[in-house]
Length: 201
Image 1 (tube, rainbow, N blue to C red):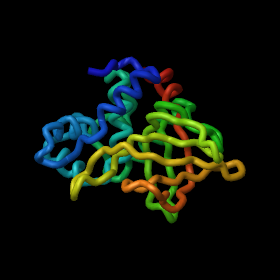
Image 2: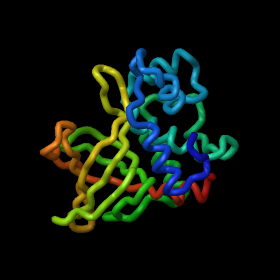
Image 3: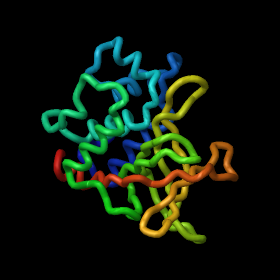
């Protein structure tokens, strides 16, 4: 059981615990996945949400794990408004003053919000670890919702690199098979989760 007091270490422990859970009916941790993304929703709504892209829904569950229920802002509470999860995360970060300046490199526990680009659609992920890349940029170990295990939504560990580009930064994800990076997606925003927890937890 991970601590519900947010620290970089407890964040890393919690994010590690999420890797591999999925909406697959045969997954013994399916209920854990459902609670993460759809806490307090009706059973019918839970089943519907399990079929949606869950990247931002997983981030909301990450916040709920560490923020006491009585302090949850409205965007963490049921009922969920369809398609609004990325905007919900952004609203929480803005309210906490946790949207970081352009070019900010995330650290352990932060959330990265990617804009749509050649590398894929809009996406949010949670940062498990970072390390300077010897050739430039920052290597990032991330924990990502919105992944697929067969045909089912899942959470997976991914590897990527963030490369500064002027006052902005670009993100490239390493293919699951290894060896090559995806096309570029711009880093739209980075959310400083330590600051969010200072305000809400």
